[in-house]
Length: 248
Image (cartoon, rainbow, N blue to C red):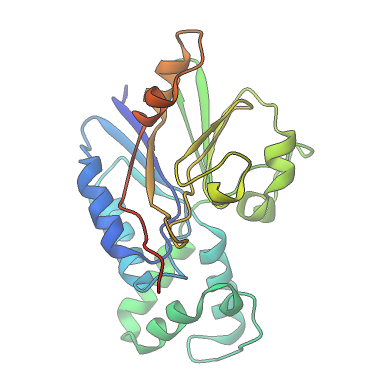
């Protein structure tokens, strides 16, 4: 299918209000659009299970919406495997990385819907591939290890610097995971990097952060002209939620 838009949504981290706002702005149409959620639906924000439920429902409702596993969902699954839904280990890496709200909401949720969400998370793939014309596009949460032909789940979910510094592949890689605010020349907007990477995590949980949706096809069409897109043109390749205000 020749999609009119190929969309990628960056990390959400439990902010259901701004996810709904973004979804309305995107105005997704299953007859012409493809959309991929890049993972990290839970933790850090106030409504992680509401976000997870929203993502589950839209992937079930729409044929051309896909959701990937993020490192925070992977941490949750590991924790539940080790401790169960009622076990509490405050030293666990998940709880020390913002998983406390998700954990407590899972504990208080009725068993059947909680188990349905857990099974949904278990079903999430690590990556998704598609094409636009001759361009291969890889959607993955964190990135890939340029030094390895065979990728591990750990790299796909956790890699940062070695991916950004060393990737030189022809495949366009669309990622979340690393907030753009932490990158050189980064802010709260997506980054379109010269080594064929689009970084979509715009720090939803950080002061001034947003949830972003990038139109990958729009970006590729801009690049196809043979000259670097201007900042204004790049801005036409994404939509964003409102900013998260700093807590005073």
